[in-house]
Image (cartoon, rainbow over all chains, first blue to last red; front, side, top):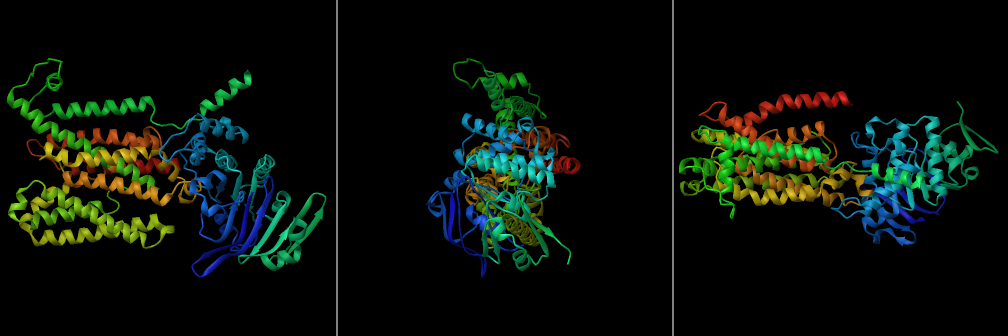
Length: 253
Length: 357
């Protein structure tokens, strides 16, 4: 479980996030949505302890500021929008790096670490890729390797910044289904997302940010209204709702 | 049962390739052969068998008699051995420091002189050669000490300059500050040198680097620094792999990136400054050696860092053999040898890495 209370992220005089309060439960998926520059990524980085913030971030009820960096890393796994994937590292080596918070600073991996990494590879169906260098993987496979690394961290909270950028529609669904399976295993998932339809399909709670402030929050049906999308994205859309969910379709003006 | 076997098999495949047994053996053999060549080659012929027996005669309880006469003995142990030892120490240090800098700054073109070590040492040595009083100039300590002090001062200024930009763009700023520092110290150094053209020869021969005056004394000066800094860098080999994921990811994996980077940079710089102060400026070792290992063996810093230390030592011993035999009895500056081998090699690395992309 991860929670923020009156979270502010500032870059000099500019506030990127203004007083965000959210609560993401274990086994739940919260999506931060909003136009470019709304503060989604800054909020996520603050949750991961990567950006300085005012206010409180609570991980399982404990204040993140009081926890050491390593301890936060054992509780929160973060996948940036464009993860660095050194092309010559093998998938196994890369996934093993996810064990870093559990390994002494100058130590090496133990058997338990290798088992955890093997389990993460198995969970994401990457066993046959273990020996392959990252540079030889396709975009979808690479995203799975990145997820496996985050999973090997064995943190109960998983933060993903735009997990589906640069993937085709099929791969987007594949990756989101995988994340959803991890959520069902009991992880707390918080993502930022550009695609509103996908956000509505997977996350049970959406938080719409604009200029750093929360302007709408709730289920897809609550948040994804044509007036909301017009007001904050400046986009002309038709919103279709049926038993399959909420669909946000762009319509030419 | 089958599931357990499958599980064990899957777990077995999840290994980080460190230094493989084969790569380790090849590197150690290369170093030993280089050391043997370094000790055996020279105007006075001394066979490898005699060298081994002469060395063994110093081991107590073996009762091996010294096979060499007084002159050969002095040539071997007072001239060649310190020279070979110093070349090995400096070569290992430059290579491991280069590998570490490339990891910390995530830039394959970084070399150990990146943060102004070379410029600072060059300026310090030039000032010592030009301005030291006759008394101080007589001491074998003056030039290395001034070079060491110059190197450290230059890096401290570079770091302060880079830091003032703020932590977010630290690596880029540091590299730029290093370039600024190198340019500035080179300008001052050239100015001082041109003012004292009578010393041009001395300054120039120091700058080009070499081991022609190596003594056990030089080895003793730099060995503690090089040993300590190599140890720190080898211990950080896994941390360097984590840092290769970038600041954000390393930090989200629980690494204090700023502190790790500082420790690695300080260790690499101290060792490099110690090496430079006894050898002068030897180009390219810090780039050629780690890249060769990457091409031949592994990209993981777990392998690159320790193997660079061993292979760098062997490489510079061999380069020194070339430097002292090609124009014998005259000597070629070793910096010329490493650059002569290094420049074409570097072009090759660039080509292959572009082809791989």
